[in-house]
Image (cartoon, rainbow, N blue to C red; front, side, top):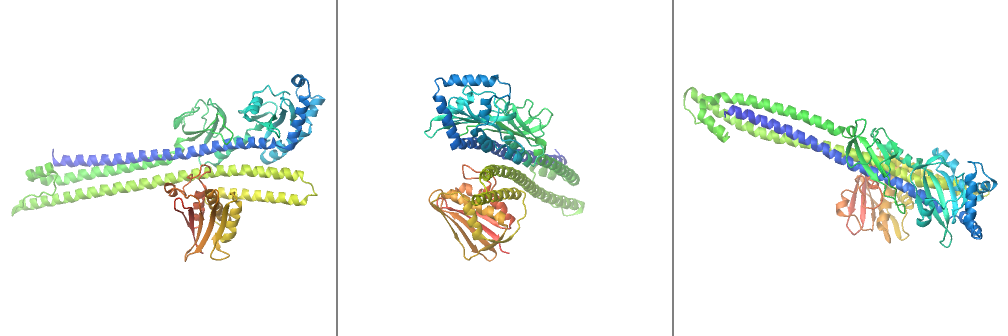
Length: 635
């Protein structure tokens, strides 16, 4: 084979190698993006399903708390005692039940009116249903119907008309009696005329004996609102959420993708839905919360795969185009080079064959002392030197180009992962904010009920209720600030007293009595330049983490010192410290060392500190306590 042909083939092989490297890089980047997206959205789906389970558990606990109210206990005791004195209480109940069901709907006899107008029924309307409050606050009633039965199954009090009087023949009644609680599935309630879940709890007397059942028909709009909030918080327009039953039927659908027609629950990561769209799908089952064992539900979250993987597709196009250009240039250069060096080799056949066979371009032709041959030999040797040099340059250029491509791929991959994590951080923050607003809503409800019960002759107590409402409003503002932080709001810096912020953060913490707290400052007051609301959130997160880490008997300390160019703040505790393998990733989103919590606290702290131009780092000696150090630039 001639040298010319060998050079052309070498150029072609090099061109194909460059194209293969570009294709591999594009495929690998797309696979990396898919794995990162799947991990992020699986965490969001699990957090959303967990939030639904916790919401159901909270409503069960609301009923359990009210089941201990004295007025309800007294009414049940009186009803049970009255029925116990009867010779045939069950026969009497069945007689009343037949009269109830024989009456036309909403046409009530005097004794039925008396049951609906009883004092306990009115109390249930005011203190459990609170219809006017929930309509004004949320636009719908929270409970469509609430009623209480005695231990014989007869209704003692109810907030509205029901289809029957005797309840002990219902499965939910026995389930609540035997197990303490009952949670039904989503269904349309004919009496309340709403799509609802049936919740029931057993009522026990002061001796722990079964006294009756408290049941509420809960409006599922509260659950559907959770799904709507997650959909609205998503940065992707194609985000779709489906709440599925155990047989794959859609209980509720939110979003633009029509995945409900036969897609059901699937193990495939990307599925094709009826309209032809390729959907990226993740699932999260209901796992329950505390005493609530969960329901046979599954949350399915879907996204348009083209929208999710658009960055990787764009990168693949760029890499393929770049590889084609480089391959064409290499091939053209090889052709030109082969043509340039082939002509002089014809006169030096033997030397050319040796060079072609051994691929050793350091070989030189024997010098000639005179004539035109000398010029030809000198030119041939010069050509060999240039080939040798060019080969070295090609290797160096190939290595440099490969390093540059790998560097660009690493930058794009890191940017894609960072954006995916930031998107997950925004949605989890919105989920956590919703979780915080639920207990705040309960406090606001309690304050509203207390204010209604207090009269004008109790101004002192009304002032305390006003303070509760002010604090709830302040907490709500803090939650709003948390959401704003996910949108990287610039801090509003001003001189802030560190001791006052730390004391306020400590007072907001929930901790055992044996935990001690102190502040060590070189001067009073110790002022720093910071946004008060944002930096209060930082101290609340760090001090709260320290108090949790100490657990029982221990100490939490806030220290500060001045450096020439910065102010240094240290929050430390006497707890067990962080594992070495976890400490390096503490400030990443969704990383936590606790069995509960979202893993966002330290990530939010780093975001706030860095937005102030500062740095935050974890200092740890395993088993000797943990510390977090913050450096803020001095103005």
